[in-house]
Image 1 (cartoon, rainbow, N blue to C red):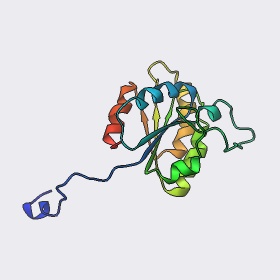
Image 2 (image 1 turned 90 degrees about the vertical axis):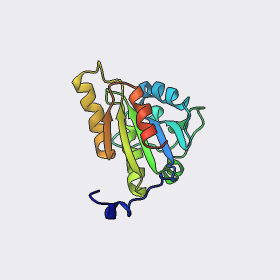
Image 3 (image 1 turned 180 degrees about the horizontal axis):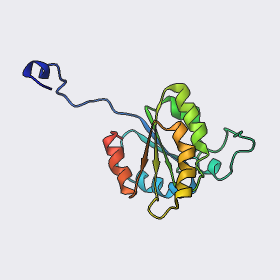
Length: 163
């Protein structure tokens, strides 16, 4: 802003709009981080896991879309319903290339124009090849990718995203 005249057009009130955020663990290792995050005080955030799908690589590039997305109590959740009500989907993965679910989740988000973010955690001791595998799976489906050296970085990021 360069002048007082321009400043009068600036909205002075804080945004009252709350985002509906879905945070999804893509592999078993990231599920530990997800469960820790879920213990926090979040308003419009749902924590889900797709680790069951990521444990089994796709056969001929095909996935079954049933029975692999669940909440932290183990109850199955419908991906379409979850994405339909979301403003943002955050996918959490660890190095090693077990983020197969990113393709299905990313496709669903893309069709519905829902923003996506990929977070890679547990990277401090990961070999470069393991990081590359995970990034290859996340990159096509994430509008933003964050490589977090410390897992508590995710807490700060969710706060910034108004979770």
